[in-house]
View: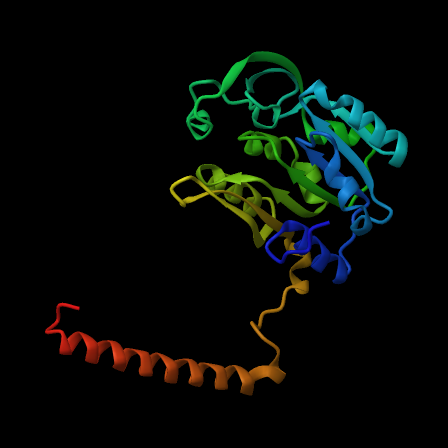
Length: 258
């Protein structure tokens, strides 16, 4: 399991050390169900609920259920039950509820491969059907359908401790607004990924329920470190002034053309 500070795995480990626990771990867009398996040491006593629209993953999800218990569903998650059309991609990880003309596909160079009708469920309905026990961890990796899924999970969100969500930069503001309105605060930004021109492309924000706000320190450093922090700032300015002097003298000597 990755322990780089920039990963959501590391963030979950820090929250676990602060005592955050989950009775149910819900993974939307779970693919082969590896998230729960890889992070199982952090989910002691938790039950996995894996959901993905692609039946390709069903053998893996059956095996996870047989080995670890819990539940799985082959379905898309949205704000209305019934059926939805999914646009297939060159790799199944990228398939999306967004139509082939949506700007989402420009991100993937238009690599679509047809469409398929799949069952759609609301997360609140599934939670009632399966009698899922809170508190929840909710992870979303559903390629542009995040807002619809969140709008079908009002009851679940009210009983959720932590939300992890893959977010395209273009979609982040809408996702963030939905979660803030549902009583969450942005806790961390992890796994920043960049496009070919090195602009920010996608990342995994981590949210915690406002009920856990007491776990977050209001101070940037411990009071015992005050003297050391002030000293570091003094040393930083001394270094900046020295570098500034050298650079300005060089520019002056070159007649301002350096």
